Image (cartoon, rainbow, N blue to C red; front, side):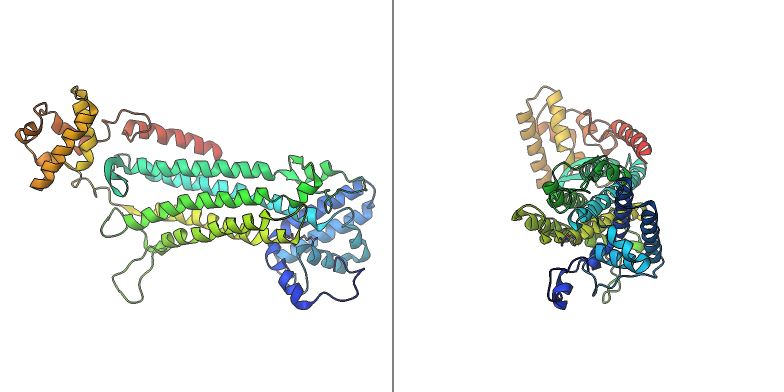
Length: 459
Ligand code: ARG
């Protein structure tokens, strides 16, 4: 027990069960030990601990880590309030009374948030690496599909032809922004709150810069009240999860529709699909569906944190303990989803021929046809109207653009000539694009090379 002197009665068992955070802050054990070691070394530096005492404490902390890792020590949830009390109790068991000196000048309020900041730094780095790998997988797939023409959609209605590579590159952009957000989180978490005490620092000459440096923080926090009660970096991290999962959920939705028989653009590997217990023919995209479904709880986790924070008076309140479960859950869900999305993309088969025939003379060339008219000197609004009439005519005759003969075209507008047919031809659909950022294969190749270089530098 870390407190108790002023109490006459024992903490109620159900109250302990209700309030214990050990079942989840056990994830912070590595960080907690690291923080305690740095703190002990600092106490030695300012002559509060002797060299011998410090050694004892540090060796015992190292031993606790080893015992935990090998499974010989597993603190019981029913006994301890949190990871800090569990470790301290073990420390007493291993080295006796000298253990009581470790918590000098420290509160669990600054300790927990120091642990948490270290964990957030580590996890944001892991996520950035995972996103880098995901981008590389997308890039490899894109490289194989520079000339795979597919339909691009708006309003889920056929819009204009694009390439599969171009579609995948759009996701690479999203993942890049996810990484930027995570980078921001890393930098925001990179301040050491240790030495802030409960809320007002310490009367002991704690060397905060020393512990910050030992723990690999770039700097120290400035205001102790803010330091112990700030969880902005947690809310920001949860929001990274929200936006990151939005991206993955959109991808999951596309994988689901692309793999339907109606779409027939991809086949997901058996490894990431399941069968039906009733319908023998079924192959269901469960993993993609679960990425989409789990996005909901990641949204919920952000709301949980925001709601916990919104009415809290300064500074530390026990409510803040509620930051951990949403954080751990979102980070794990996001991380696992990134890995599985990558594996699905890596193992799927793409039906490169899917739209080849179907696109011949398709109405998705209508804009290109209007552009052709513009180049003949017709104002765009008129061109739009003329092509609209061509579409109407085709629909009445149940024909596609390229089944019309020149006469029929000319009946709608005399300016049409044989070169208009070139425009509705799949062959040149992409290479005719002129703007930067379009699916012109030349630009797509350039983008792929650019990403290749960028990603190889980051990995
Ligand atoms: N379990 C607590 C948390 O996560 C640790 C800090 C507790 N501080 C306290 N004064 N009870 O926030």
